[in-house]
Amino acid sequence: MTIGTPENPVRVAIVGAGPSGFYAAEHILKDEATHAQVDLFDRLPTPFGLVRGGVAPDHPKIKSVIRMYEKTAARQGFRFFGNVKVGHDIEVEDLERLYHAIVFTVGCETDRRLGIPGEDLPGSHAATAFVGWYNAHPDYAGEQFDLSCKRAVVIGNGNVAMDVARMLALTGAELRRTDTADHAIEVLDRSEIREIVVLGRRGPAQAAFTNPEIKELGEMEDADVVVDPADVELDPASRAFIESDEADKTSRVNVEILSKFAAREPTGKRKRIVLRFLASPVENVGDGRVEKVVIGRNELVDEGGTLRAKDTGEREELECGLVLRSVGYTGIPIEGVPFDRKRGLILNEGGRVLDSHDAGHRVGHYTAGWIKRGPSGVIGTNKKDALETIRRLLADIESGTLLDPASPEPSAVEELLAERGVRFVSFEDWEAIDRAEVGRGEPHGRPRVKFVGVEEMLEALGEKVSS
Ligand SMILES: Cc1cc2nc3c(=O)[nH]c(=O)nc-3n(C[C@H](O)[C@H](O)[C@H](O)COP(=O)(O)OP(=O)(O)OC[C@H]3O[C@@H](n4cnc5c(N)ncnc54)[C@H](O)[C@@H]3O)c2cc1C
Ligand SMILES: NC(=O)c1ccc[n+]([C@@H]2O[C@H](COP(=O)([O-])OP(=O)(O)OC[C@H]3O[C@@H](n4cnc5c(N)ncnc54)[C@H](OP(=O)(O)O)[C@@H]3O)[C@@H](O)[C@H]2O)c1
Image (cartoon, rainbow, N blue to C red):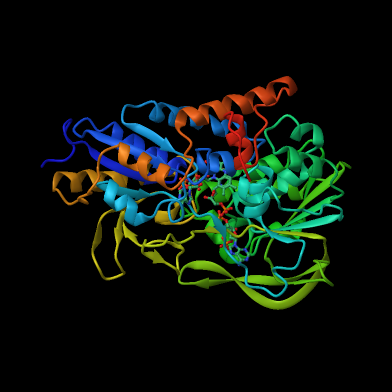
């Protein structure tokens, strides 16, 4: 029987309701030649992935992309199954019995490790946890951050490092205008941290942050930005790169902005954000908790055309009570899905899941977004990325290379979840949660006051939850 017709629509399960999940759903549902039904699963009751749980609360405009996802959710054939974890509440094998195709868009939800002694000392945290905590992600509600020290060290030079440095520097009044989790506002407002040192292992010309994000650090209400002029003096190879046609505009402008910061005098604001370069943490030291970071001084060496950081052996100790490691995210394997452990992503070629490095496509299995290509790229990057995957899926519909599910009827998944006692959250339920959060924010002039626990969210739907 032909699949993708009005009589026999193609049934697709998408696992993960972040940007890539929504873009994948949109690309399938808007394809005029294909009749499709999409069920979008998320382990949380709330959709939108890192747009809700990652994007910094003081950047509300970025979250307006949600309006596009709401349009996708309003399309005929779309259903949301929140509060359903694939690999726990429902297995990949179950999905194979219910759908013609499965698209994994689960993102990269954990932190990359530094691999240094003392990495796990109390007071040293992954940025993943700090970000989840201030954004009210249920996984991180119970995290404790002791901000009673004077100095924090942020490791990494990406945009997440910029976010966490800024969040540590915002004033209570600024935070109270945002949707930062209430528990985080309380702790951040009482913070005694006066200096936030950001360590980049390479130089200013190799920083991964982008221009608006670095510029913003120089415009903080109650924090001065401090850069040592010696730190922005480029080594000959970086200078040659920045002056060459090869240099991208972002790196060139980053260097310009940092040079302007280096020429500034602190204006006596309450806090300081100190940006340092060619500096790697080699050890966290402390008696029962972090008391200092041992920093190794790096030099840049050319390795196959890329300037890499090499330890010079020079050491320095920096006292601090909080370390936030922001050196990138990595994927978490799902039972039954081929995983490239080295790269921390699902084994795939152009979005088609591969059985192993040298085997072919696992029929009916696809992937998109961070878990397909790794944890880099802004929200919009996932649109094109999802399109590449969905083009392949559509071609496979055309050639009839899909799964042959035993129970493709739409009610089958609901019956299975009911049988297993899984209370899924529909898109209408999410809209009710959303209205409740927005309503809680209104009296305080805030965009919303987020619920933190899953129980709280279900209670907002008028349900008694037994713990
Ligand atoms: C801290 C931070 C801030 C950022 N800020 C910006 C910004 O300001 N602007 C910008 O353009 N980009 C920003 N980005 C990048 C942007 O968020 C990503 O490009 C984008 O979210 C990746 O989309 P994704 O759908 O692949 O993954 P995600 O957004 O991570 O979505 C994955 C979804 O899968 C769900 N999931 C995971 N496992 C399962 C499972 N087993 N079963 C069911 N569901 C599951 C998760 O709950 C999540 O909802 C930021 C990234 C981070 C980390
Ligand atoms: N406002 C925004 O648009 C926004 C906000 C947040 C995130 N994002 C996007 O989300 C993506 C992820 O951001 P990210 O900051 O997590 O990752 P990222 O951009 O990949 O940055 C990771 C940083 O960690 C450094 N690093 C890696 N391993 C290290 C080690 N062992 N020791 C010291 N430093 C190390 C990297 O340095 P090297 O370069 O030397 O490897 C790099 O500076 C990015 O594409 C980012 O642009 C966007």
